[in-house]
Image (tube, rainbow, N blue to C red; front, side, top):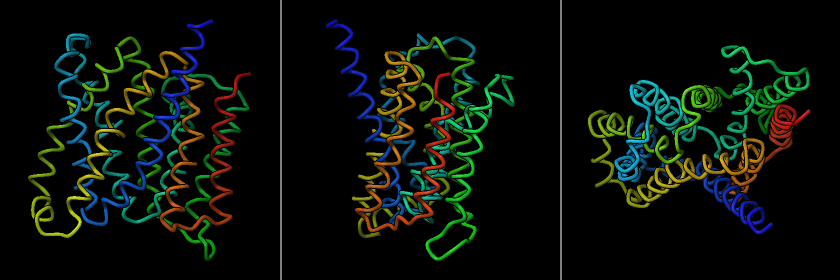
Length: 293
């Protein structure tokens, strides 16, 4: 009983910590984007994660499967590098709370990709969940406070969640037996040098750092993003899956938008009926997809 209670308590702590970290990431992207360009925010986020996880990678690298580096690199691109750039781009154009709500579509795309590319079979209930969730995401892109209008800047977020879903299926098929810390550190280390080259060679990051007011504070926001959202939360989430299973871990999907919406309200972002309807559609869809028969 003591062991079961300990595991349950650890699961709750991991769930709350992961939800808080990832739910806060969207407001941090928005704040950092007020000083730095989206390309700089996205690349710098990966660089901070790379620096933080490099020691862990050096200690854990022997646990990685041999001749799998092409898949590790692909996982780093799909799960971290490209989504970081896309979320930074979207965060410069749309509210952070909206990004957080749209991010909840990841499990829907995970199931959809499993059906299309991995020939997994799903029930009619799960198909209904996919339709409901995608309808909710569509409404978030169309229903604006002043009426119906296409918001094209929700597309980078949707594309990022699609890449997350591709990465989840990749991890399931290629790395199911790899320790979470070894895998998480390897994927970030694989793309870290490219992010550093992109940051220093193709942006005016250093000029902005030393000339723009608020640059040091913005660096702090990105450091929190890279260390906590990109590095620590990824390891915590993988650990949560190991000890509690994917069903419990999927609860992050329901809870994370609540955190992002709360931060958005604190920052003065609007939360109209259209957004409430869209969020409800997404969460209802995720529930139907993940619900046991």
